[in-house]
Length: 249
Length: 300
Image (cartoon, rainbow over all chains, first blue to last red; front, side):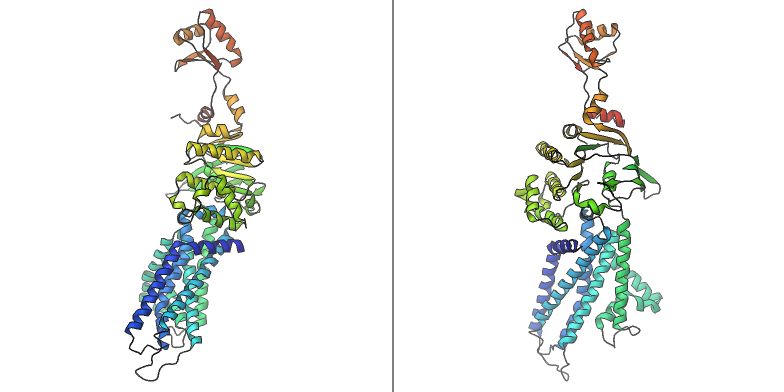
């Protein structure tokens, strides 16, 4: 199992798609940092770094989703899953190793991107508020926010992974995710608003916001995180069920 | 394999039977040819053996292990290629093999050995997407050899190879068999199978129609005729028919339906009429003829 996991990590780290995505992402973050620095009038405070990090959350979740989906989707595309199963026929182990590798890569890369983002903001975040006392900033709370974003990115990664396993390609996961967000969530919010507390995006926002004055009031951050974990686990188990029964053609 | 059946469900309902009670046993050692027309169930058999497809009924064992439940116990001793090579196109040939080698903790030196043995050492650092079909096939073969397996299951290993490549693969597989390994190879290049294999099984419509030593199969199929060439085949045919021998004429030669051991009678009859054959030999058949007869396929 360790060897399988190690091999999957090496494979993911060698993927050109992820390397390019990381380079583009880092380039974009540096550009944002430069633009903020150039346009700063001395009012950009450290507390505003947290707001900026909140703004980065959605792109990071999308990145996590793509990493998870492509981790297995590309394998279906190249039919290397069949080849791999002739080396390790225990399908549960194969899928667990792949999901674990996708999750670990998501954590490492999202943390790396957050560090880069923080580094490019730091030179500018020295200002003071022009409208009153400068809001307090705590590195601990900032790290907690980063941690919560990482947690939700891993959930997104596992959901993408599960959908790509069931749909047998990356596109199925990306399309399925978009369809869910645009159709299912919109319909629920429009016709069954009482169910919206159970929606993925509502709980993701709840976990990322983390504070008591968050949008979703009926659930604590921990409860929302547990619910997201249950969704991810449910999706993974469903994917595993399909994967174990699937004919490798 | 005992009574192996495999049905595939069709999208529009109904099923397609790929294997219909296939019974097959392959003894250890040597090169075993697995022949059959397209759609006869060869690849499905390989898939069932490797746990990639689930048989509808019947049993399937590989190196003594049930291929559906216990394959993991023997998989380290089995190398395989199923259909076209499945490789990561943007990774180099070496990287593709290194990823597989890592699964069984094989040393990098083993990767170099197999790359050398299939003649890909010079191109190993190039991306697989720049490889020709033949090179991809060689790389897949290298992957199958990586575990130093005692059993090789190779589905059309000569696909895409040029004549020199086919010959190299044949010699490689023969040498592996000489080392005591078992090589099971499916192929549609029957002349190649005839040169390479010790034993063959022929399947048609998911059933076994013949199995045995290549030489035995050929011997069984021939022995029913003698081929005669002479300057005046039309007159020769008349003479032989008049002597009560069933004779057909084709491509300037006569085929006489008598056992080869009675060929002397043909020579005597013709000589009695002043006709002297310049060629007289048993009407040999090749594996292709046997295959076409047994599977009911038409020659191209």
